[in-house]
Image (tube, rainbow over all chains, first blue to last red; front, top):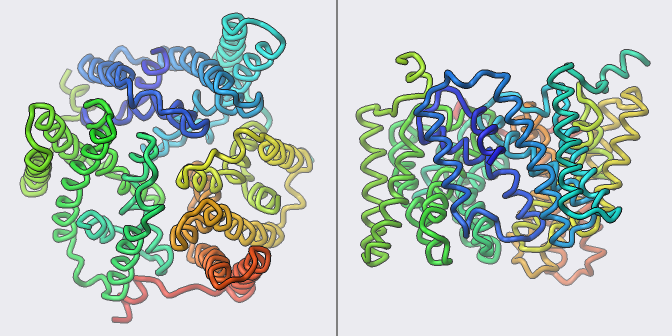
Length: 191
Length: 191
Length: 191
């Protein structure tokens, strides 16, 4: 839900309603679709179209309401909530399916980030992979905290809350303080 | 078949024959491949390489014949036939696999449009998602008409013809009259 | 291993370590992932995260060591070794899964080339599909030689060596002599 809303908001631009809904659907369910394909589970929204309906209703609502409520800042914060939730949900579904911890962590990152990456590639815009922001890193932290907490014996709920909090806190810090990691080229210059 | 031909034609450009065939194959079987992955069916062309052979023979034929016969207009009409056929075939395969109506409609749209979208993304060209044309909308109409007609009790053949006719008619209208849907930004300007 | 190393090297640029590792992982396992999805096999790295660990360790090593050892030429040769190995391994896994020869050849090409193509698309750079080099063609030759040799009765090892040698020799020739195939536009100009 959070993810659909936040991600959807980013699907703005000069699109008609059908293309708009297409982008929203890719963003909302793209990451989870890839995760399900990779772990060999039935793709979550195919047999239960409720997910698709939520995404499409949200797309229509956004389109009808118009762009005014969409201040960049509010979108970024909604998206941070969605990213943190997806990172944990993605990793949780993978561990529940018997996937080893490292792969489950990767599934959390893919679930959180891949929908938005695909949307940006399809839209011809630079994705979060090319913007020097702490986004993938926050998803990675959240998924890793969840997987490690669960492995250390915490309940799924406690591990999920810990992972969500870690991912959201790191992303929030990045949004507030413009944190970024050193780049490869940066090393080059320094060395 | 139509789809392979029409879509293939669009895979022109400064490519050698192998890359050309690669683009043709992606366009021809890409949408159906994604559909099969999503509904959990064996990917249609893997066990029966006849589909791949048709695509490759068509690619070689086009490449050898050269670009002269490829007037933009003729390509667009062939592509419209292919799109309408793929929208119905994609939705029909999904309903036959027990997929619910809304998801089956989405499968029709993906089958019809995804091959071309992938081709354009790989070629670094703006895809139909970015051109303000009625294309996705026509595929959506065709798939929806098919699914609704079948649900209303029509035979698969009758529903298929209805869906095909609806998709093709809408796309034909868009080609002839340059129809387009209002855009999100358009609303912004107006409100 | 070769593939991970060579391909990884190309994932340079202004990325932080997490994005860098993400690109390296896509390049290293992307092609094989698509192959496994298409032939309906469990995705090779999900249950056995060793592959992912190798890719990530290599990414960290490259990132820490810095870009100096990465002369373009050395990367291209490592990548040629990786491409030749992946073309054969991809086709071999497909034939072992009972996939017909033509589709198995396509799987070899996808395994060898798709990881790099996805990386370039995600990075917003022109992929090998757009550069007029003999790359796909070399992967195609290697996969075809393997499939034909095996079909002609050679052992998998002999067929694999033949395919590897063919792919690497053609790619090496292209690197040394700047070979390229005639383009479609070239024909247009000529005819």
